Length: 290
Image (cartoon, rainbow, N blue to C red; front, top):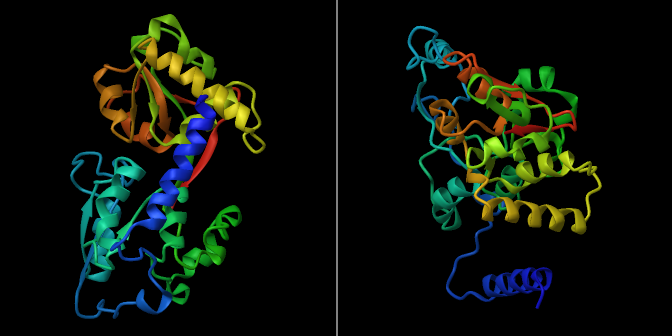
């Protein structure tokens, strides 16, 4: 059995196993069961789970977040802000048991990538928002982001950040520039490169580097890249696959180049101006985190 046939067989088997599972409550939450009482008048608190480096910090005191401070002062709402999201699938594994059993997670707002957000919307795990109380969404949201296929009209989600998935590297430590995706495979980067664990973002950038139009990629394009990455892993060229924790490796110098998010690098540059972000000449991916 070749690898493609094996993957198809495993995929079918997994789906059948899940469908046949006994005693597991349905994960889907019907619209009538999603809405909760509005407690904002009496419970002046909000719990928000986000990614690291996704909000402004004070230049002199990085523990302070001016935007949150201003929000709390203006509204009287105390915000518990946690930077607990490192990887979409990892976070899904953390909160899904509660949501599958129709239980609360202890979080009011979460920020996840749009493809994972689509899963939450499809399962009915998010509540529709009252746009009459959010005039800035209607007024300022980029038209390209106003009505994604997974949430027509943006009834349940709002983009928190948008940016670019590209390549970050330490120019001083590496001693040269990176301009192309293929530059990541140079011999002096063996064992000092990381890729993102999110398959969509990792492979989109890599396939673009091979000249693939990622709006029209084929199964052959995908499997070719699988084989390429497999070879690089076996050769110990790729150090590991990461969530947002790549920032630690890049800052420490354990990694010299990596797939990275533009917003993270902007904050890292405040401490280390030698860290650079580049959109490869072959192109990069625009992301949005609702």
